[in-house]
Image (cartoon, rainbow, N blue to C red; front, side, top):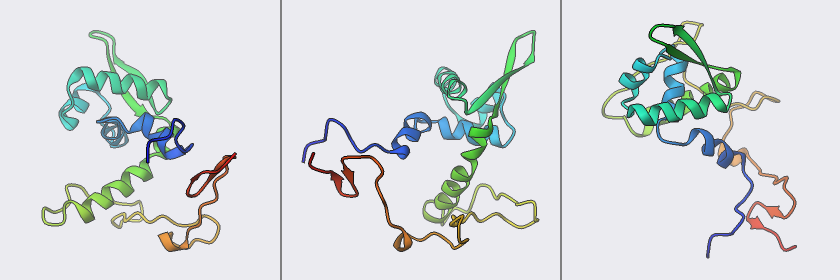
Length: 156
């Protein structure tokens, strides 16, 4: 089947258009860890400087990071997550846990995050209404865009 001219309207696709570019989530990871200076980002991410500068500009323009001068001469900036950026932190933590489970089983985890309670954080998605853990078999999608069903576009 050929790709449709207008794919399914999707908040995941919209978010990935912004943070799905190579290095963008790693920039956010470092900013959330408090490593928001350009040289720290280059060192910890390994991105080419020009690409990193482009990603930083895009994340600032999108309101995910703020840019603040920390030196006038030479002029240097650090980047910190905004509220919108901090709202992506659970996504990063869940993605990290998935990578630890499925990609690094034999190598060990490169980082452990400790919660303020003193225990290691093991992120779990829960239903806000009932508090139950979220499992695939418990979910039912209800498309909200006219002309779309779970299986795709509907006849007009």
